[in-house]
Length: 330
Image (cartoon, rainbow, N blue to C red; front, side):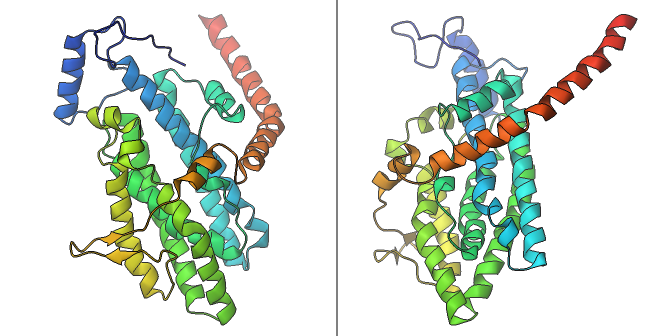
């Protein structure tokens, strides 16, 4: 992974050794013109570092994000629901692959990124450390969690780094289906038997606040947002994306007959919905592993990595064998 050095005293923090203010100005002019930055283009070392951090974290979130719903494949209530869930989990695995591919040309190898995840040095979205207690949790993940992800990823589809932007376009098209599928499930249960309605409401009670927290800390508490906005990676703030999420999902949940577990929720004169105080202590506790299933999730990823070693070894042996005739011909 690319290493960077501290800037000289008096030099702006984003300008590293070997870089010039003129290079930065030309780079930022490209972004201002709406040009996409490609992996082979010149870019500030800090831009590269931030992209590797952000994209690898996003990729990790996809491969860990398979687990809460994947647990329910064998317990799905019907063949239709089972096949839909299997297809979704496969989609999510593919999203992780797209994203690892987008980060690799920046100098981060797949092995290094996965090692950082498994050694607990890299982060992923902490919402996937919450348990899925009932089948309705699968639907609520689709409606709320995927809904929040779409809001963020639609914004990232316009980001300045070309490979990340293009990956987001494909991922968003698939996530939109996942979102509709989850909403359809919950609306069906909300209109069903008393037991089904109770199951849907309990799932909403569990996932409402984590879905709001998933969109990131308030802008004042987000240390990377400033530079990411400056370089066109983040086009909207965390709070702006959270507001879009509220304005879409609150009316839909209420229309479904569900009760949002926020006594302070209200619609202002500005037409926007406003939530009550978020318990950020829970957010940070889950990130730090003090709450939730972080160790369980990473244990499952470690087991899958270890069990797949023979596949990687076989693929490497095949590649080496195919390479030898080509080298002999040269």
